[in-house]
Image 1: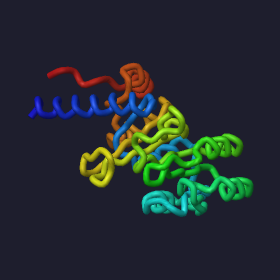
Image 2: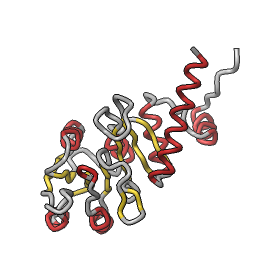
Image 3: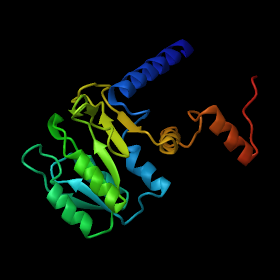
Length: 212
């Protein structure tokens, strides 16, 4: 059983390393549904905030904000790449109160992510790239998912790579990476770096279990 567990963990780490190199995103964590929750835990989004979601997307891009007490604001799509319409997004952002934008790369077509990122930077909003249908798509030489604060990929059986269920949260924010890992592990810090674990043990006055 131990050998099988080690083999599965080794396979997962190899998968993560390969995807990291492919997407140019440094840190990857399993289970994509954690993205909004982690950002709220960080304090970058709070209950009642307005979150822009595409009118053309998937159910979870709307249901997740609703479940977390956020206010989804529908943004129209454009007819060129089916992604967020930048003019409509600009009007929504100018009204204020938006702390997060969820951008979907629909059917493998890269959305206008550079323009959306510029708007998010201007108004201080977080950009989440939903790349579930666009693994391998690029904007120039840059893979989709590398522009936003967070990118999510799906490994549901209808997508490019299937693990039957599941997905990946990708970020270059080391603190967000540690937070998502902890949330995935039901609050445990076993996937933190050794340095982080040592700091937290010192703060709480605890120590590792000694070998039996």
